[in-house]
Amino acid sequence: MTKSDTLKGNLIAAMEKSLGVVTTACKTVGCSRETFYRYCKEDKEFKDTIEDISNITLDFAESQLHKQIADGNTTATIFLLKTKGKKRGYVETTSIEVTEKKPLTWMDELATSKETKAIT
Image (cartoon, rainbow, N blue to C red; front, side, top):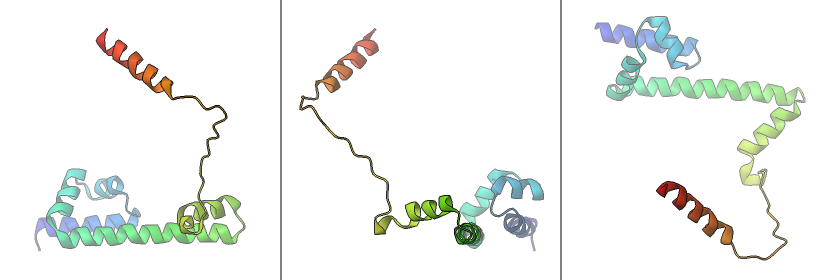
């Protein structure tokens, strides 16, 4: 086993322990973030393992969110619906009601104003 193989193994273990926080994992094993990202770029197996750790971290976070929902946390429920319930219509939209029918000349004025400032 080469020195870089050992470092990769240590990085993987540190990534699992830090829940995927790259800076923390690199500091734990004593390597730079640049080395970590070079390994990701050059070693598909390493990159795939790191991506698996990221997915496990997301699964953990989702399980914590579900616990909060089960405990009656309204904010957690709303967050889940806004992010995962979009296809079912749980989306915030912004409506603008126009009460006065006028041409959008303010856009022309804004553009002219910016052009004047750019020239001066």
